[in-house]
Image 1 (cartoon, rainbow, N blue to C red):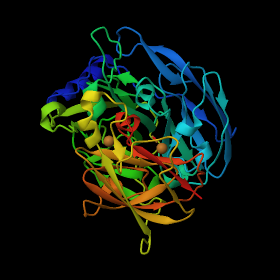
Image 2: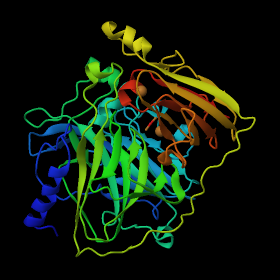
Image 3: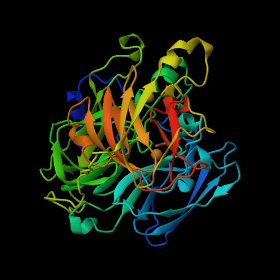
Length: 480
Ligand code: C2O
Ligand code: CU
Ligand code: CU
């Protein structure tokens, strides 16, 4: 394990990174831990309990937090594709919560969105029948109007969909050793070390940005890794922060999976963007024995441009890695190919639907402090109104454009292909199967509707800046 001298050396490499707009509030160099693994591949059942907790994040005062089965965040659920898993979600809180399976292709009535809110004291028992390729997905509460706050204080966790074939693929698969689940979140703490979130006007407009980086709910921790190939399953669980990730010594990351699962081969990237709600799996090569850190560019994303949005530019450390040669090296080379087929959808004749993510209402109504500030196609979310219906197994071309700032657009119950971004070929990280895509101007999507959602249990589509979603930048559709 890491000794103190190594820990200091590892810390010293931070000096090379430019100004830290997001600071690591503490210089403690604890080892990163991973959420407990709740492996339901054999039992085909699992239980989540939404509960109140207390968490001390940074050696400071304790903060009242929320979690599934624990004080903050939830366990990593591992589910077998091709199987039916009996889930149970119990709500021990005094407010309604839900558990939305973001990235699972399941019917609308078990999707866990706003229509499946669980009342205090109640339980919800959906059966999750999976027939999708392996992927990193996640789950979080999704009650309209309180999603941002509940996720902020901890109601989120990671899901691994597996087919049990990763060893055959030559991919790292030892949980917490060479297969790392990493939830990226930015948070804010007051002077006493309590997590704060008051969602004032600025946060409501632009989405919350914190000044402290958390990975798996920990501040300033270092991931201890073997001297080999390490798989990072990155989940952007932040309310609004967009990361542009790279490694501090510029070594490549090998992208193997996007939201919906594997690519057909690893793609070497020096940097890529991960917006709220998105996931990416990358392989990092530590066979040389040299440490590095995962870093991010500081990206400003504000409706008021430079006025209120803060400075863009500069880098901050997301997660330092420290090699421990006593850990077993299970994988020491990259796979040449993976069995994820790249999407290639024939969109000739597909019907076209346009979406405009609007903030203008919010701008005008800033002074009125209305909760419904945002809209899509001029309609703020209305839980009782279906926005449209699509035909089961159809393919549609969705053209989505965003207003004033960048918006991560997410669709429930489907996977899609990004056909273009502002008329150009999509960025490499947007060329696999997706369920969330950052709209910076205009994107064109080919969306396939493989699962059913009735009028009373429709699917959501929304901006994944959670303050925008809660503010009305969401709609719903049925598939029948
Ligand atoms: Cu990750 Cu509708 O949400
Ligand atoms: Cu979702
Ligand atoms: Cu938005």
